[in-house]
Image 1 (cartoon, rainbow, N blue to C red):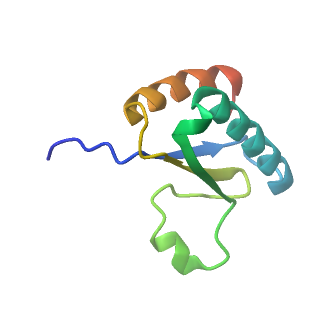
Image 2 (image 1 turned 90 degrees about the vertical axis):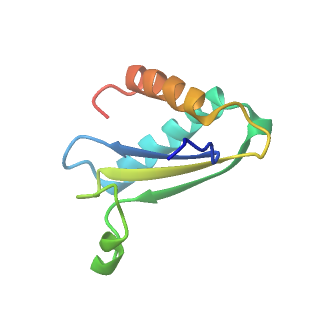
Length: 104
C-alpha cells in the first residue's frame, strides 16, 4: 500500500518502572511542551494524552501501545490540514525527545 500522510502522530512514552502516575503526568507535560517547540503553532491542531492503564480491561483490547502501568503514556498529536510532512516531524521528535528525556 502507498504511504499516506494523515497528519497524525501517536507518541508512546514509558518512564522508569514504578514511576507514580503524577510524575508520569508531569513528564508528559514536559514532552508536550517540547513537541510544541518542534511543531509550529499554526501546524498543530490538537494533542491528547492517555496516561497509565485504562480502568477497564476491555480498553486494552483496542490499545496497540501495550501500557503496563502508571509509567506509560500515549500522546496523540493531530496536525493542521496544512502542515509539513508528518514523517519529518516524527524523525525530528525521535531525535529531540531521546536527547531531552534520557531514560524515558
